[in-house]
Image (cartoon, rainbow, N blue to C red; front, side, top):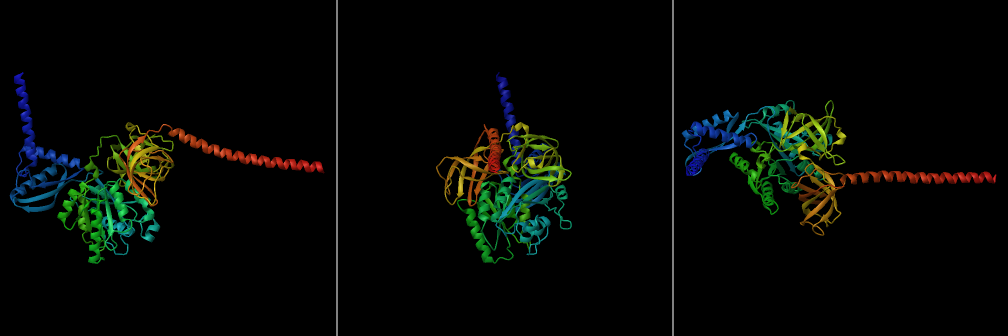
Length: 588
């Protein structure tokens, strides 16, 4: 027994030494200078793991290591770069220098290692674009996506508008999507032909695609903007501020909405070419004050160089940092820094560790009827993966049920694909489903989930603004993901709620049941009233179907009852006229 224990201890010691050796191989600043074959294999596995974990890219730093002075001599740096290029080549990726720093020990370099485009498998990052009306949202997107500067009179934004009234007024009133593609070297691949973009070509050539969700800035379109922020599941939020106007109108509303939904925010100040320096300085001062305030608690960082861009992109995932860019859509000033930042943004799903092996769940944010194809739904895959010809459950319908359907075809960015994974947006053509039976807020889920629809739920609610008091029986519009429906407060943990109050509230939908999940963020609004919260509990519907049947029977009963009254009244009139005729005949 003593011998076996000794052998066991020796094995443990050897394993520990191997682990320490592997860690030293990865953490040493000279790891890439002259690695052995064994170390090279370890470095290859490590780089592959990092690339896969971040859906196709990672930032690799050469010249820094634990327990040593930062920096490498020029000769060692050249050897390390050659080995990194070799590692990248074996993984079908490319390494591009992001920045270079000189220090006491020599040189430190940071590289973006990104996989080359492989047909339909590209990385996707969704950015919601918000800000006050006339801040230049659509103009900036037109300049970024079409690679053509604005003329100062609305040339760029005309390429994005979907409706005639938008072109006439210059104001966005609907949710629209635009894309910006980057190849493995970080170059923009958008090349408009006759003013139009070929999305399929962009997605074929791009390793990373930025999807801009262009939202409305006018107050009367606030419900559309809220739906865009909740229903389209953006990874990041780009808050636009006009340099000459400052932080006005809906700017604070949209910032508060992004903070409530825990979406990282970066700010873009536009129109710096026409703004006097003193006004721009005042706008920056007010903006920084708002970002540092008790409600935001952000760290504003002015981005003025490529080094600033790399630092901001690497630390942006903390959600505390808020980069501020200053650009001009007319002169093109500092647009290159904004594009570089977009190129370095990592999908938020990689940060939060979305598991593609989980059961599939897809939220629907829009429906279409395409001639020759049939019913098409679009939305975001929240978990798992969905393949062609998969059988999923669609619901809940008006009765709260989920019906089995088959995926007929899948498109990503107008390009046919075989499957869609967690964190990606897509459109599905459904077999034998009428468009009239589908609405925004429904979901496609795997039968393994065994979904249930809920009429009632509880949420921890904070009132941001309300002119009077909120009590039991109050009704307002609730936004939870793609769900948008009026709900009634049936109970509260406190008697009344005013601005700044917090309470556990129980809600009940008034129209139909919905598919919900715990810990989901919600926005509660009605007119000037705005509240945010998190779903804490879901109540299993015991009499949901009977409630529907009771409501249906009640409506039918009312209709028959009214008809019966009319018939009775009609019968009385007929009887009265008949008796009058008889009396006249007798008199004659």
